[in-house]
Length: 206
Image (cartoon, rainbow, N blue to C red; front, side, top):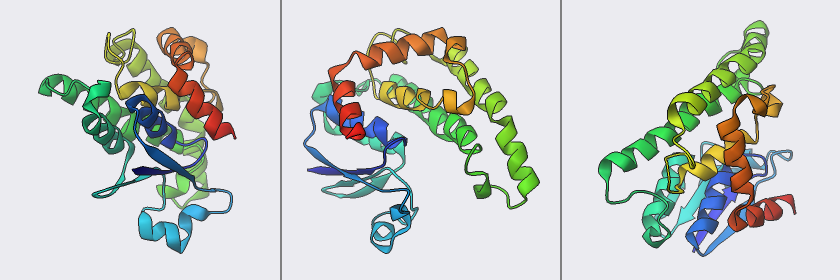
């Protein structure tokens, strides 16, 4: 049994969708960010980083979305969520997810979490103002140079797709017009047609 600790509106959505895609047996524990439950002693024992997602497996605890997604794909190979037997193709999928994690997500975080990188209010405000540009540049790279179509890596749906879908949900809050990126917009539409995605979104809304 896998237990995923996550919170609504966070990148934990990607791993939740992947678990559903994989047909895994899992439970979800929602962390209340408004109550700062991610900083509670009990949660910090589980994940000292004080962030979500965190995933409890039978071998230990995993954090960081790209690692969780790779673990899910490799643990449930019958679901065909990654090109397991092609090292180059698997590395390309990992590179895609790492870009989402280390470039796009970080640029997005500058809008509300600038204190992670600076303690000067003027600097933090400058980072916040830059978000439409910096996040937009990331989406430009994905739309024009990284997205293969019809799914993120090409013909086959992979662990890259729930992650891409999750981060695309943040576009408008980052002052990004989704219409600028028709490939991503079409990807979002097709993701919303998937039963696994609809089930997970309903669970997160409840």
